[in-house]
Structure formats: structure tokens, C-alpha cells
Length: 219
Image (cartoon, rainbow, N blue to C red; front, side, top):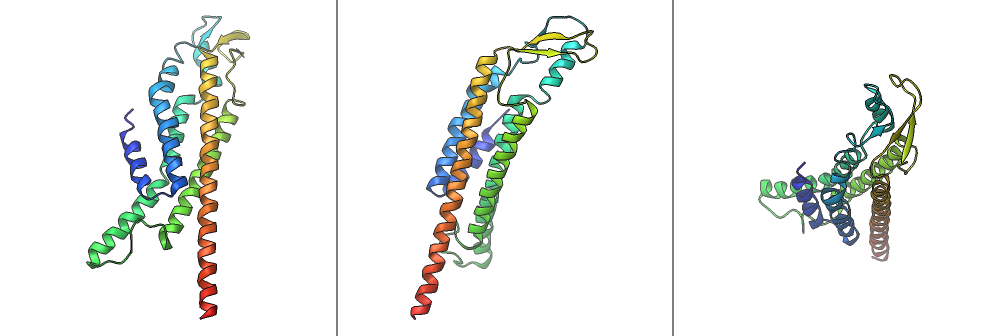
């Protein structure tokens, strides 16, 4: 899979982000996207072929694998990366709308089209809320699908067409668990960064509104 589009998106978002937002972009790009492409993808590459059960009953391994891994960790991680990055498009589109509006009217309508204020501030806050919500949803999804953030070495399966309870072995469980913990840790870090940026922007805007009202009262 080519991740160039996601890299370009993150680069575009970086122009219009606050300091905390730039840290979020760096974390997503370096500790999530690059780790996924460079290492994690290859670890889960042959997970189905390396899943072994102690019986050769036709169909048994396939059914057991589908039961314990309804969605591959790595595919779910890829979907998570795409989904949590997509809300940032709202900010990019809003800035593009401002720039097109200025071209259409052939005059300067904004001090800086990329400055986070007015309608763009609302769009930015919405994107932060969506990113935070999606991160939490995917963490819950990971937890529910796999009964926690662990990868066992051995699973027992008694689903038909398996004739009885069979032992099935997962390949490289320790290595996969390390990357799973890394995934969870980076997701939690991104949630903290998003909430910090959200709080910072709301606080900054509240102070700004308060000062404007105070100045008007004095006048």
C-alpha cells in the first residue's frame, strides 16, 4: 500500500497547526506511519500462513483463525491511521475555501487565510474532537475484538469443522505484543495531545473574548 497521500496530507496540515498540533503530526508521521511501513507490516504479513493447529482437519485452521482474528491487527491499525488523519482535511479544505474566496473577490478578505480564528477556529476544534473520538473508538474496538491488549501464544478452538478442542499456535506472539503495546501507547499520546490542543485553543479564545469585552466596557 502507498502511504504517500497520507504523508502529503500531514505535511499540508502542519502549515496550519499550532505548536501542539505540529507535535501531533510528528508523532503520527514518525512513530505511527513510519513504524507501520518499516516494521509492523512485515511482522503480520504471513500471519494466516503461520497460524498452526495441532490437527489437519480441512477447514479447521481457517475457521479458528477467523474466530480469533476477525480483523487483522495490522489492517485495523492501517484503518485507524487513515481515519484519525482524515478530520485534518476539514482544516485544509477550509483554508482552501478562504483562498478561493479571496481570488473570487479579487481582494484581501483575511489577514492570513491559514490563521486559526473565526470559522477556521470552529473547524479546527471540530477536527480535534473527531480525531480524539476516533482514537478512543479504535482503542475500544481493539480491546473488544481481541479480549484485551494481549496476544496469547496458544489458543484453544472447538468450532466446527474441528472434531474436538484443538490447540492453535500464533506465530511471533511476543514481537506482535510489543508492537501492539506501542500502538496503544502512541494512540494514548495522540489523545493527550489532541485534548491539550483543544484546551489550549478554548482557553486562548476565552481570554481573547474576555479582553475584548473588558476593553469595550472601559471605552
